[in-house]
Length: 489
Image 1 (tube, rainbow, N blue to C red):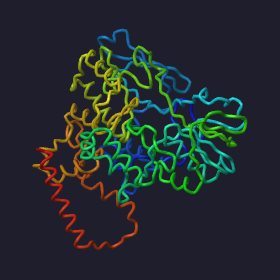
Image 2: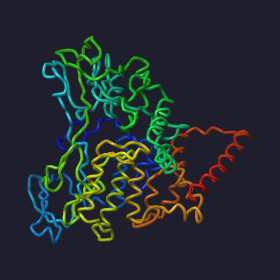
Image 3: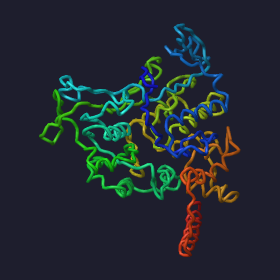
Image 4: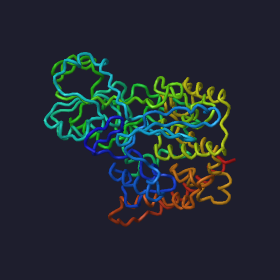
């Protein structure tokens, strides 16, 4: 869609998933095998259509409907019911629901802090939030400044550099930049997001983990030499996934700059740099805020970029747990299986199969999380809504009685146990057992690498491994077995 709709998320044409298809599918519905490992947004839409057709979901969805308000019924303390007012086709209607799931996400309300950029009102060029961006054509032969080095800002700067006269990318804190193509050419998240690595990281003091992460990030290119290294290397910030940025910097197509000191009529002055840079277009990739305008603040109140939600899902103070928020969380892993697992957990709560703790206990946990106190071990998730993907999912799966029992599995199905522990923490793990168990989960786990290679290996090349390589693989396998033995003991 070319125009940007108010209150809805917006995509630019070239958006490609940052999570690979094996790590970002629904746990019981793999992507088609011929889809690329990182999926363009148009194919992702087709996948969602396939999913909705497979499970006959369209009959349950009311499209083109605006939710105006969600309020408690007078007898809410007993019934837990909600009155939902909607508008569709100009007609307003009111319906009563036994439960509500709010799935609006956090990428709809652009954050545009113009007060932080002195002189912006005098700027005679064009400026807009990255949410408005669709095509790079508007940058042809222009001098472009992109403010903000998140994934969107970096994508836009790289795209603009193919057409613009000059492109500047301004960042305050810097970021780690990684390629989708990771070790041995495999998708980054299939290498990084494993239960073994996650356990190993969480056992190490944070400074050591940060040092290891720094070394790994700099193995592609030295972030300091390219001016993009994060200033705070202890607190984890979402990495920037971009395969082209270092190449655009080294060829002079993108210039990294510090934060803006002042905006003038036709130029910008950066901090710590005396000269003015002529600018025609400014793109503010300054992120998003979120709100729930259809809910009263007494139900869900947003403060400091987060809400008081138990497990990032339930308002902790309600007498009846019949309203849940899905997807208001920022794990390092994919949002699709995260949201799906949250929804499964909510359904079990609504059915009464899972009982939530008393409100006082839930509020205590929420308040502890808001303090952002770090344990001193593992990655430091100290920003609002950030959390450890595998740890969070496993917590929900444990409550669902759906977390794989690796110790028992090591005796009954050692091949699968090793794949789950040392291999990618793919969504199929979440449907191996428990409510909603999928019979195809085991096969999907054991064949995920085959599907990953199939779409890249479009020209068959004969391999001839040496005897040394064979010996090395055998030695590695034996060492792996010994490690597993001691870990599970």
